[in-house]
Length: 328
Image (cartoon, rainbow, N blue to C red; front, side):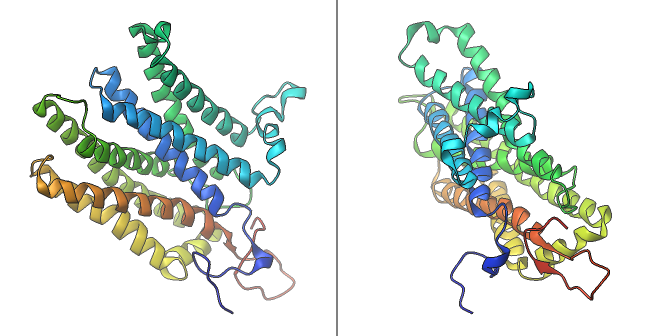
């Protein structure tokens, strides 16, 4: 049977409960939240300009895209509000991680809207208000990034996701996405017109360090995730085999490890030894950005997708592992 979709073939009868749309939503959440976090982090330190302003606006737009994909995946967009207010009538607002998550994303949308408003509305331009807004953005960004890790870990019947290192993997990789995007803005959009070159170099050098450390921690988080998953439960070994050695192995070793971790790591190390405003950086930074984005989305997708390979629990017949949406 021919298959033109992304990833290994999965029969239509065994479509995933959470698939590529949720992977896009989770990826855009991390990219948007961490881009806004880094923009707020620098503006709170009075290192601000065109790059941080564009970063905040772009991060806000990424959050909107994430919300759109979450709503699309619900299947009934007209009832999207139910996942926030599902517990309202019983006095249990946000009674699940999914409800909390949409509230976190709603918070990021609101803080981004207030930031945009501060550009035009004078009362919103006071230093006290902006400082409070920056810290709210940073705190909310961390919550928005990691909540889906807790959502997956709380999903019943998927021992592959019952992993305490998943929030660390989500946070470290998400920080890498945001740093790579801000590095791209800083290199080509600059901080502000006529800004001090030394200040711009320091800005780019610091972002390179953040991205480098994020990639290192992502590699560590993957090692921890795999170790915990293998020792956690025998059922977790079945999807892990798919991830490491079978259908999804090319995507893991090729896109996630090589493209998303190894290449950015080597380029960031090389970038540390050169001028961030030089010719090498002009080529290296876009490559880092593209590698991190492709590897980042693939990371989210395969963590979701491989969980749907399981061994049916039945003592009545000789069962083999298979793809399917049922909780194992």
